[in-house]
Image 1 (spheres, rainbow, N blue to C red):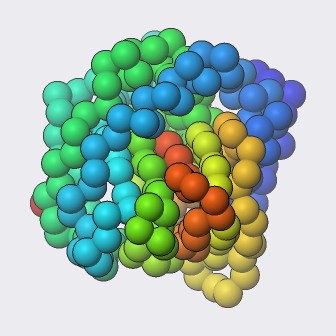
Image 2: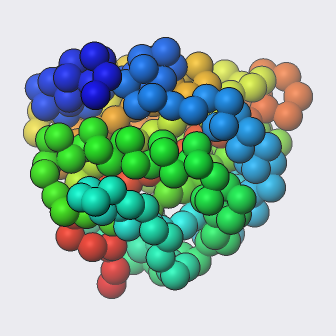
Length: 239
């Protein structure tokens, strides 16, 4: 266990979230950064999200599901399934059965990818001991080709899972995109902008709500790429 991990877990337990700058994320999770860097080009091939109810065309994504077993440690992809959330957690897109193209096999099968998901799951298991996690992984690109891009068109929200990880993969030629995390039971919160590749935000979904403000173009081909990974103990969300 990394020397940074107890501090990470303590902060998560105390505040319900922790932001890890890239060096801290690398040390805490023992990330294979060169291996992750090799996966970045896959964000160039994300299909357009056709479910946006605000009529926008600013989001592209892929989605796949996995099961992580904690003892013995394993990560297995499950047959492709839709993404579903209740309206109580997502007022804009809740209740929709959304089928997205799966994450490419060369990405989901890469050792660096598997190590990342397993390491995050092991951190969350320090707060909530479980036999297995049901994981949904989302590759997102928000672009500014049509002007404004909205990372969270549903606004401040929870995801209906146990824990959430938001990993910044790339950010270029944009302004805005401030991340906001607030106590779900009060008014306290923090605001910051994720700028470093492989920095990440870890959250206890029962305790905090989160959102990211719209991005605006600041040059040509502006985009913000993220990996969002959710962990849930009681199976995948379904109607």
